[in-house]
Every structure is written in C-alpha cells, then in structure tokens.
Length: 218
Image (cartoon, rainbow, N blue to C red; front, side, top):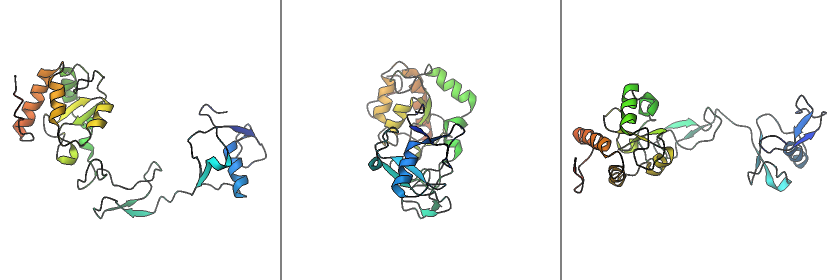
C-alpha cells in the first residue's frame, strides 16, 4: 500500500508496472471491468474518495483530457476559454466571473493579489496588526483581503483597501457587500487604532460611507 492509501499488486508482466513490478490494484480491476487496458489520458476515480476501496462498483473511468476544447464562460459574459486549465482541472468560469464573487469584466489582474503589494506597505500594515488577522479571530494573518470586495469595485491600488487576514475569515467574508459588521468586529478587538487608520484612508478615497454608529476615535 502506498503512503496515500492506494493498494499495489505484484504484476511484473503488466505494461504499467513500476520498476519493482507493482501496479495499482484499481487499474487492474478497471481493466478487467472494461475488458481492455486503460489508455494514456484516462483516469480512474474512486467514487467514495477512499483509495483503498477498489470494489468494481466504486470505480469509474474518466475520459482523456481534451485541453484544446473551447467553451463559453458560464456567467453569460460571452467570453471563451479552454475547458481544461493549465493544471488539468475542468472549469466553467473565467477567473473573477464565478457566481460567488459576482461578475466583473476581465480576469483579476495580478496587481490585485497580496503578493504584489509593496513590501514596505505589507510590513507596515502587518506590524500595525501585530501579524494577526485584522478581523480579530486571533489567527495569524496568512492572506490579504479586499476590504471593499474586488468584485464590487475594491482595489489594492487604493490605500486602506488591503487588510491582513487568515484564510478562514477571508473565505467567509468573500464578496459580502455589507462590510460594516466585519469592520465593527475588528474595531472591537485589540487593534482598533490600526482599523481607524484603515477606515480613515478608505473614507478619504470615497470608497466607504461612514456608518451612523461609527466614528473615528470613538
């Protein structure tokens, strides 16, 4: 058995045997089920995602990947793309067009990722928040969030729109149009002064309208 839980069978006669003469058991079972060899590009999937369950009824064959097939983006924008991305994954939407984030013309540019924030800017903001998630969950910040979601017009090119966050909070906030509960959560935490600076910058750009219940320095 491999470290990932796949079962190996000694079959040195098989064309797909490794240097030790072993073949994946699920491949042998699928080939017996099909009455032929599995060809290059075909993949065998365990339906219950248990790599050790090689019952014939738990295995299904996926066809060879067609990397040149072109499809239309499912959001209705009319743009085309290859059905298979460079990593070999099937896709339905262009980057930035999926239903959860909303539709915004074009793919998200690289400048809108945390890696492209200026180093001194990242270090300053992280230092202000003590290296922790800005939404005061207590986790270490390992990602960067658009305070105003990118799908709703926010951009890292505007001061005050980049806040450090942990991945779970980043995913939960996503493209939530009501960001004030998240701001209030941060303001009630240990880094209120850092949040005052963030919100002051966002207000100066006109990206936010001040909530009636919130005042700088309150």
